[in-house]
Length: 149
Image (cartoon, rainbow, N blue to C red; front, side, top):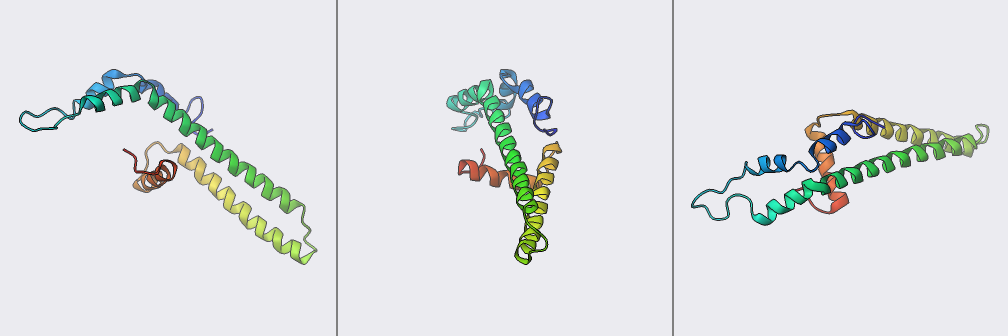
């Protein structure tokens, strides 16, 4: 696991710290007060209720889903690397076509290893740069079909 996920990962600790914390939701909602004389200012009752429901349990569920997706993707890369290595080991250097295929598989194994390294590094970051945020937004769009809200 990484510093992001796992039994002691910071995302798990974050989830435990904020799940069900009505006071944090209320403090957040105070940032958007009703303004006298300005129609539709502040936060609607429906939005308040939805945010409270989300904080009460949906947030923890979404964080668990993210951890499961993260681990599934990591496991897929590990399996892919193992399959590539297994295929390469079955090839012979002294057969021209097999030697060429073995070199191609070696390049592919390096690319997968690089992906795993980037994956691990992303899991150890605690504060994301704007580049990470743009990738996160792109991933969100791929998964959910719209921009995060």
